[in-house]
Amino acid sequence: MIFTKRFRYRFGDIDDAGIAYYPSFFHYFHCAFEDWWSDGLNAPYDKVLHDEKFGLPAVHIESDFLVPIRYGDEPDIHLGILQMGTTSVKFAYWMTLEGEDRPLCRATITTVSVNMETFAKQPIPDKWREAFAAFVIDESEFPGAT
Image 1 (cartoon, rainbow, N blue to C red):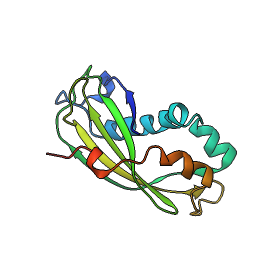
Image 2: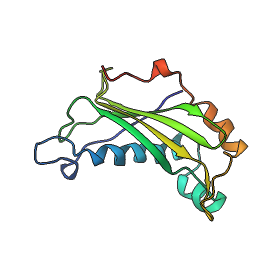
Image 3: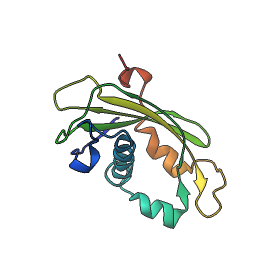
Image 4: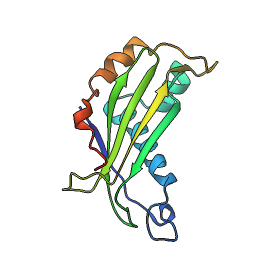
């Protein structure tokens, strides 16, 4: 299953060239990640971080910027899981405009499961491993950069 959330690019997200400032992509990917916890997993991420002491900080990012995003564009941000290991999760993110399949940008973000009190790596808790399984996608579902 793929989680999708729409966001609007605002004035502060745009650089002097009139297109999305590249750090805003990562900000919106993380916003989608937080909304996935709340809307897709029914568990606000702040509660998971603070109450369960479970976090998934990013340790590796790869991205492609394919089509300019402009002020006022409202791309859908899609999130799926490409791989899940014992202690890591590789997320796929991509943006599309309504009615279009071609991605505007795409990224993989690999995270590692940590105890938020010690920041020590830990196995992904079974509860979350089971919940994440519904969002595992095949590589063919992750749009290419071409």
